[in-house]
Length: 237
Ligand SMILES: C[S@@+](CC[C@H](N)C(=O)[O-])C[C@H]1O[C@@H](n2cnc3c(N)ncnc32)[C@H](O)[C@@H]1O
Image (cartoon, rainbow, N blue to C red):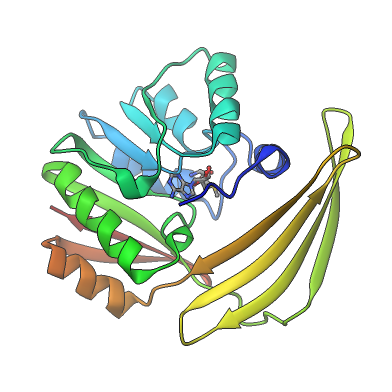
C-alpha cells in the first residue's frame, strides 16, 4: 500500500501530535497492559514516535514499523532528541513476515482503519498472530466515524511550523455504509508545495472483528470502550 504521509502531512501530524501527546488518553490507558512486558513489542504505523517514545523511555523493548519515509525521518529525529534508539522496520505492513518474535503487537490510533479492505485486515491480523510468541497479544484501536459527517463539509486550519504557514483544508467527501468506508480529501498547502491526501478509512464492527480474531485462533478477547468513537480490543495468541 502506498504511504499517505508525505512532507507536509507528516510535519502537521508531528506538530499536532508531538511525543507524549495523549489521544483520548491512550498512552495512560496502555500503560498497565505494556509496562509488565519484558519481551519485544511492535507498534504498527509508529509514525513520528508520539506513542512509541514514552514507552521506550519506560525501558520497554518497543520496535517501530512504518512505510512513510517522511514519518520515519521525523521518528529518527525525535529518537535523537530523546537520546534513544530502537529497531525500525521500514516496509508496508502487508509485507510483514515475522515468526514468533513479539510479546505484543499494537494497532494504535486507528491503524487498522487505514488498511481499507477486509482482506487486508484479515491478512495483517493473521501475520500478527504468527509474529507473536506464545501468550502474546494484540491490542487494536477501533475508531468509528462521526455520524454528524456531512458530505462536502470543509474545515480549514492554518499551522505555523518552522516559520512556514501550512494551510490544511479537510473536505468530508463520502461516507459509504455498505463498504464501511469514509473518504476525506485533505489538502496541505505551503508557499512552496501543495499535497493532497486522499484519506480513505474503513471501520469494522465489534462482532466482525470478534469473528475474524476467533477464526485466526486468538482467544481471551476483551473490548474496552474508550470514548464515543473509540473501542480498544485485546486478544491473546
Ligand atoms: C496516524 S499515524 C499514527 C502514528 C502513531 N501510531 C501514533 O499513534 O501517533 C499512522 C501511521 O501509519 C503508517 N502507515 C499507514 N499505512 C501503512 C502501511 N500499509 N504500512 C506501514 N505503515 C503504514 C503511516 O505512514 C503513519 O505514519
